[in-house]
Structures are given as structure tokens and as C-alpha cells.
Image (cartoon, rainbow, N blue to C red; front, side):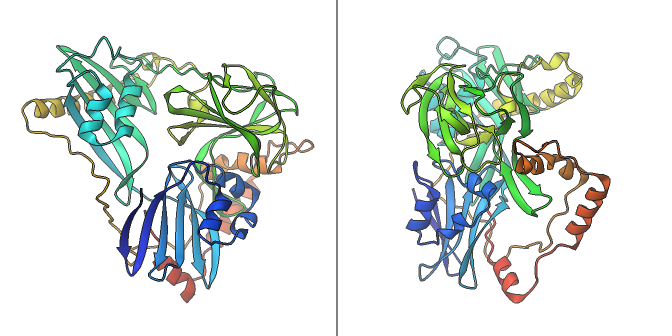
Length: 460
């Protein structure tokens, strides 16, 4: 699907990244220089391989068909920005700017499919699938759903150029059958019942055994690098381990990729039920029988730790994706969460729960009385709240806080990691002060060309 809108004698084309499309092939199709990839640093090259199929990306061309800018999302917070300046093309990573909106839907069930009912009223397979996935551990969809049952959900969604972007941020979901209501309430990114019982049951384990690794770099969707003064994403967890350390499948699934790549070296991807996909990179070699199309069991050996691709030391980069969206593996694998009612956060949870339930009761009451009808999302109607002339650009780079510096330690460590160097790198007080002074002094040139480029920035 392609959609276009016109801004100041330029055309914005919105497309979906095709399955199997490589970045180098994309550059060739758009007649962009291949050096945009080859001149990128190692971390950016690996990030480029995180572009997910079906991601919406944006191309700006002038009336003569000359490409001016490209924006390709890497995560929910970071995107690749390709732009033209003084006749040359450049590549950088920049934050994604978006609008987050509170949304809701409610409907009664006609027929036997909750998924089909929600998709019909919302025009969104994402919302329908998310609702079913969210309540699958709370209800039996064959036994508990009856004609006239009511389903409803309060949630948040990010939008860029009028399109939903990223995942669904749940507040509360509800099924009402007769006089019985069942809820799933999200609190601190985890789902609970109304009584505070943890309801999600993930069937994933860590891909390396306890005692054979240590975490050298953690997951982040967007991070400001304190030395290089640029944005980075690390869409996975790095487990530093000795060469040859066995790697195991995190869950039951089907191998959908097993080959050598430029950035991630020997790479395996496994598709799991529920829209999950796991990624295992930098392997020394694949285990016997690891081929595309083969099925694997949880805990099955699929390869061995190595340092292939763009890697400075032996480690496993482990990624987890849910419906194409990068997710922190530590939020899912091999962790048993306690019920919130046993936690010190129980009082705060109850306050949040009661607020959501009150909003839900008003929504359902309005629906039953006919005062509320869910609006179907119309994808063909592109809404653009920005133009090329009303964007305000801050020409001074952001100054990271002490927390930012602390968060960035593992990036520095990961880049210096090799077999002979201790990667537990820690900033000294003197280094922290020095870095802060560098941040305060650093700013972009405010010459004419730079300002003109800033005015042509697209804000999505």
C-alpha cells in the first residue's frame, strides 16, 4: 500500500518495507549511494539489520522526483534519517516524534469470533489480535464467549502522519458475560487481574545457561551516546560468553532465517506462536540440523557463541520481537513475576485499577444506552498535522543527565569488549564532569545551509 500527501511542492510517499528487502537493495532501488551503508559505523550497520518487514517508512521527493529525505523506523523511538545537503546524501539516527492519544472501543459479540467482531468495528487487525492475546490467559474463548457478551478496551496508541505506530499500550481490557466481568489491567508494563494476580504466561527461557555468561549490554529503544554524540538503539541483550558456549532456542518455534549477514554475522531467527520472533546473532557456527523451515523445541541447541559479523568480542546478541516490534527480552524470558497484591506497589496499583474501572463503567454504560459508538479507523484518510515550514528545530544537542551517563556505561563497555579487556567500564567523577562540559559546548553550526536543512525536517 502506498499513500501520498503534498507538502510545499514536495511529495511524501508512505510505503511498507517488503519482506526480504535488504538495505543495500533499497539504496539501489532509490538510486542512493551504497556508501551510506559502508561508511556507517559498526553499530549503525547492525541497527540497519533491525529494520522489520512491513514497517511504514517515509520518502520525501521534490516535484522533479529527486529524493530529499527518507525516514525508516528502527524501533518505536528511533529512526534512520537519510537526507540530501549540498548535493550529497547523509545518514544518521534521530528520535521519532509522534503524538500519543488515548483511545477506546466497545462492542457486543455477534457470532463466535471476538477477533472478527473487534476488527469489524475498529478496522484494525492489530487491535483485534492484541485484545485476544491479552485475554487468552484469563478466559476460554470457546467456552466463555456467548452471544451478547461485551468486550471493551481503554488504551494508548502512538500516531505519526495520522497512522498508528508501534505497539498498543494497554490500560484496561474487559469481557462482560451476563453478570460477570473479567479484567486485565496493565501496571508498569505487566498485566494483572483486578485482584492483582499476574496473568501473563510466557513460554520462553534464556538462550544461554546460568553461569556461562554475563550481560554486557542491555536493551534500549533510544539512547544518547555520551562519547560519539549520536543516538543509538540496542534492540536486544548481549550475553558475553566464551567462544563455543552453547546457544539454545528460547522457545518452541520454526526457523525462518539461518544464514550469514554483514552486521550480525551468523544469524538465526525463530518464529514462535503469539506473534513472537527471537533473533540470535554473532554465532561461531550453527548447530547440526539448523535450517530454514525446521522446527525446534525450547532448550534445543541451535548454535555456539562466537564473534562473527561486526563484533569486537565473543557474545550472543539476543533479540525478541512481538508483531515486528522490538521488546526487551528480560521482560519475557525466564522470569516469574509475583502477584502485585504481594508487592509494595499494591496500593498504587489499586488506585490505577479503580480509575480505569470507573472509566470502563462509563464507556460500557454509554454503549448500552446508545450514546457511544466506536469510530472505525480509516487508513485511506491521511492526516498530516505538520508541514515543512512550521517545525521548530532545537539546534543544540540534548545534555544527558547523570542517569543518562549511568545508562550508557554498557554501550562503552560493549564497544571496548574483547577477550583481553575488562568490559566493566565505569565513569569516574572527573570523566563525568568532562563529558558534561563537552555536551554544553557542542552545538550545530547555524550557517544558512544548516538552517535550511532544519526547516526541511519532517516531523512524524
